[in-house]
Length: 77
Image (tube, rainbow, N blue to C red; front, side, top):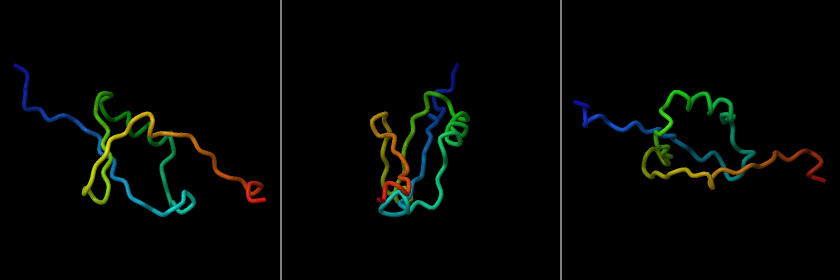
């Protein structure tokens, strides 16, 4: 008989606010690092975002992810 009390695996990503603009972020993972880390988890594990030390939570969908570009010095002209 299968253990019905087995807890569901979840991936919780604890986030923090580092500033009001992307340039204020001190350090962040790159896509390759995140992919490698997520390989450790089951493909069907839900991803949950944790804010404010677990005070509030949120989900993640495809529409939450977008591509952006780092401005070059020429963009300031």
